[in-house]
Amino acid sequence: MTAEIQENTTETPLLPVLDSRQYAFFFDVDGTLAEIRSEPDAVTIPAEVRDHLQTLFAASSGALALVSGRPVEQLDQLVSPLELPAAGVHGAEMRDGSGTLHRVTLPANVAQEVQQTLEAGMAALPGTLLETKGMAFALHYRQAMLHQQQVLALAESVVAKFPELVLQPGKCVLEIKPRGKDKGAAIYTFMQQTPFSGRIPVFVGDDLTDEKGFEVVNAMQGISVKVGEGSSLAQYRVKTVRDVYRWIEALQRHTLTFKKESEL
Image (cartoon, rainbow, N blue to C red; front, side, top):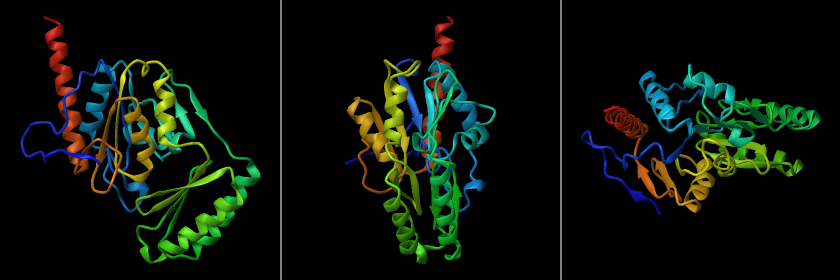
């Protein structure tokens, strides 16, 4: 069960204003830092939000990471000119705090056969979209809800044939990804590394793909926040992406105030 946080109708932040020196911040992207769009390429993060993230990143000594189903390259484009630590493709790609990129790959023959199978299957379902991520595949049906069951059957047939792959449901999307890679494992890995280790983890997400992250953060006595409706393991809840923006703004304002006071 999640604890409902009252709607923000004033300048009061929805969540506690945290001391950035003690916390490690993890943010999902689509549905959390950016509004969900029917076309993944249409997603943007406002410039002022990127500025606030930059302030929070500096104040936390770099203990801020993006944890997303998107590839790291796309995450960089969304937060440009920032280059943050990031777990892309649910942790199949990870750029650590030192800037080193680690990537899981599929055998070339497996990747090729999966892609060919999915391309043929999705082409027969008008309105659906196949997004290829190298070692993972996203089957979008937001614009073709009547094909939801056919997309599911296609994805399940692929996963059944290749045991190294698993199926991850999301909001109007099914993702096929390497087994053992999820947002919880990614956050756990970050928390063993500098500059995240020794801090209290905070994770904000909106989708089924984020539940593994909430589970890990809860086990670490951290703060888990669900954006939007639906049952969740998260301890707290906000209603909209804009509420997340307000909270990040409050965090960076607190950071700037602390800096000014510390300079006295």
